[in-house]
Image (tube, rainbow, N blue to C red; front, top):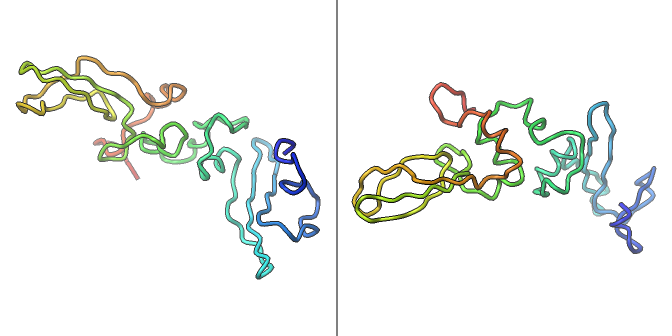
Amino acid sequence: VATMKAAPGSIYLTRDADLHADRDFHYDLMHGRDAVGIQIKEFSSRTGKVIVKFQGTLPEAAIEFGVAGENVEDDRSNADILASEPKTRADLMRLPGFSDLTTDTSGNPNVWQNFYDCGCGCSWDDTWSCQVDDECPRCDDTCSSNESFWIGPPEHRELWDTLPEAGASGYDDR
């Protein structure tokens, strides 16, 4: 708040938001036993009504509004945010660092850069959600990757390894 309050206007801490008629948004911070929550309300000066736009934890708000994970300070990890939901690798697309990646046909983030060399002399690379064989674009032979690099967020590699793929047989990908 001190950073945002460098000049008159900007952000105020107050016990009674109704004292500030020139506001557009109102943020209520709530401290719970295990987390800090936030309720974001939009104030309409035309109608005088307040509309709740979001309610949840600070990390959930950061995900909802696209704030980078490094700027979110809370005592919960991104893995904890997903703990109460059905989990597949596709669920990770809501986390910072994954949201900029492309996805495979099942919605799993493409976190591997795979490199291929075919016997016909063709070389290529492709990103995919796993280290997968690919068809040569020149001769249609199936080739295994000769090298693969993780391009997903390094801090979530361990979480990635614990989750099933969305769309994989035997898994519920609701």
